[in-house]
Image 1: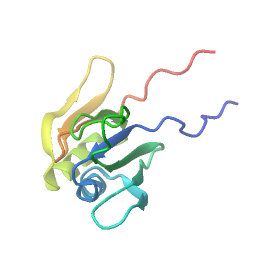
Image 2 (image 1 turned 30 degrees about the vertical axis):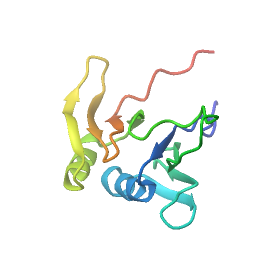
Image 3 (image 1 turned 90 degrees about the vertical axis):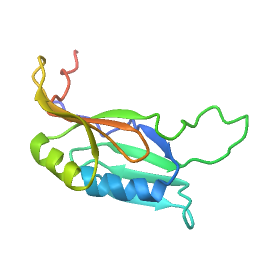
Image 4 (image 1 turned 180 degrees about the horizontal axis):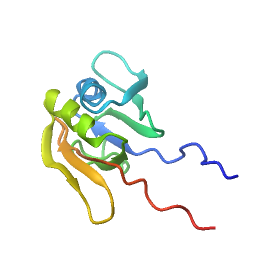
Length: 136
C-alpha cells in the first residue's frame, strides 16, 4: 500500500496588507491560520493550512532592495486548490465578499470548479479535480 507523502511544495505570495489578506483567506475560502510571525501590521512569515492537506505561505511586501530577486509583487499569485464541496465554498466566498470571476461550472476533464480574486488581486481556482495519479 502506498501512502501520499506529506506536502513538500508550498506556494508563496506577498501582500500589501498581509494581516487583512490572512483574515480574508480564512473567512472567505476556509484556510486555517497555522502560524503568523511578525510585529504590528508586518507579517514576516505566515502559514495557512488547507483542510484537505498542504497550504500556502505568505508575508508582507517590503522594499527589499535591488538584490531581492525572490519576492513576487502583491497581486501576482494564482493557485488551484482541491475542495470536496465547490458549491458550499462558492457560497462562503460570495458571502465574505470575494470577487467571483468564474461561477461554478463543470469542466471537460471532470472537475466542478469556480474562480475568485482576493482583495490583493491574486487568482484562486477551487475545484474537485485532484490531478492524475503518479506513474510508477
